[in-house]
Image (cartoon, chains in turn blue, green):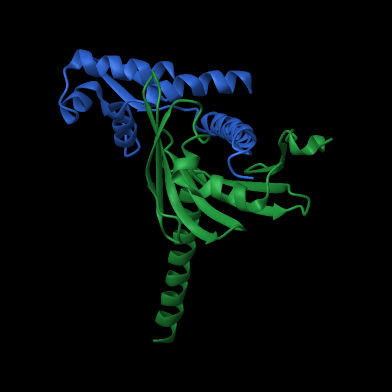
Length: 112
Length: 162
């Protein structure tokens, strides 16, 4: 679970960016080259490479170079991501319950 | 002397009845009315829902079919969470869907019930059921396949009778 959490932390950071979320959405419909993606999102190749690298580091995508073209597709670790998402979600709700408890105690005098 | 229960809330009890669901029970040292208000008044929700980061409650239409969308602003970026309310029974129950922008298509269905313990405390039970894209697509796929095969069988039967 610890490694799941760490992976999901990088996934959270990777996905905080709307362009990167758009890239994943696009890849959900099939693989694409970096050139395709750069054109689709109106970016330079260098800019797109950086985004793809961030997604690859978070294991959300994999890339493969065929000839001179680098193909990008969704990562192979969907199930791990889902397990990580469940763990993270559970932590989130537990944290919320703790904060709700603290909030109710804090406001007890105001609202008897 | 006041009861210690009025000052300390027991930690949440968490169980995972199945692979895809999480069951969380938590007792709060507050009457049900106050707990309900803290969970449904946007101005109050903003004070505890997020992790101490700025939380913008963009929508919170607490009625059947209504949308909710909360956006957390952190140093690293922005996290959006949203869903729809499926059932809202005042002071009793909220059933809603939950999605994080970062995991599109991964829908969690939350069933939250409030139980008056009769001693000024309230138990909140959260049951979360995870739906994965694989499951959804799988169901869709097999359903369509089954439906298609049935249609073909019906067509076969019709053709043999003609």
